[in-house]
Image (cartoon, each protein chain N blue to C red):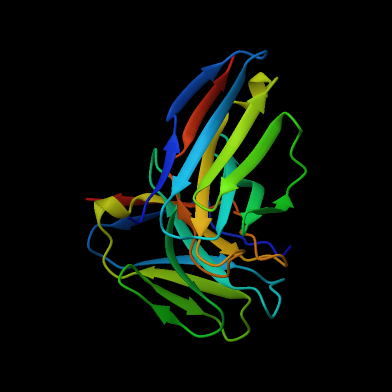
Length: 114
Length: 109
């Protein structure tokens, strides 16, 4: 299994809703990443978990809350989002913590905030 | 963090080689050079990475200048499936990957 699986693929939410994005990998990778990608822009790093501990938070607003319950699973909890938070949210993993090598990306969760 | 500069777009004919350039004049001695590509409606896909020496794999080759201030991704025979945005990325001081603006490659039949 060489996949990073993200659910849901599409999510529409209101500004007062609470929702979560989920990411799963069964490759035994020890680092997991959240990126945000706006249309026609490159992905922007949000968070990195290395060995299940939050290693990097790129000054992301607190309405985005990451969680890494175990080494295979990464969640992104969403609360009180703004319409400008609408984007493609990409999850990635890498074998040995923060990486000098290959990142494996999921296909993303497309979020629309109304 | 060191930054990369790539052309916004390039075109290639099918079955011909493609050379995608990247400038990274402020690269540090410990930065690796990575290339990823992103096909429409998909997440980025790893292509290749290297530090100092040229690298080859089944997808592409990476040629790194001797002073490491530039590199070139070489697709030996472009196919229509290679049409994508290609990102040249340096690993930062904390080894995270920060994407630049990328090159949109169009492959013409």
